[in-house]
Image (cartoon, rainbow, N blue to C red; front, top):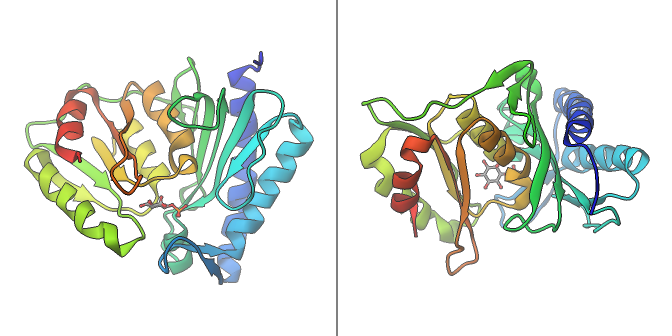
Length: 266
Ligand code: IPD
């Protein structure tokens, strides 16, 4: 166990996310090349993803050498302190590769295990370089966009919920994902597919959408932003995996969360 102060971890996350975001933006201006494909042909990694993760990892090694690390682009390290940093260096890599300015650096500090079903998130920062927007939270201290405190609405308007979602990279999952969209439409005023899960979740916290659902996210996609949602008063859950092992992430304002959870499953 650790006596780490969530506010200190939050400040580290904010500083690193900003520095990493500046690097990502510079690399984007210089031109992006795809370094490899991962789980599917559409699931790409750029040289910038790797470079940005390496920067964050080396800074954390200097600042908090006993902590663990779980990142999208490099090997996990359990550490010795009970704290693990969960990092997506560029969430929204496909947007980034195409020049759509909707991508983010996501950094969380969690306690306990490196399993999102059981860890306790202590701090999180999600930085959107193109908008210079820093979403951040420390456990028990609220969620913030820069220096503005975030509070979600209790419920959605009579027009229905503005919902965001995402689709898996594996074409075999697309029919299921589209079926999920069809099932939630009765409670939706409209749907958005913006391309970066961490920003979708922060958009729930900021009142820019009323709910978000997606099957198949990885821990680094939601670690920081889930805390930002709950600290803003929103609800977040990881619902059971389907037969392909993909958990269902749901986040929403309280008034629509249960209906969205029911309609989005299985
Ligand atoms: C992806 C994005 C996307 C979501 C995918 C994620 P990545 O993360 O968040 O919006 O639909 O499920 O994998 O690969 O760009 O870090």
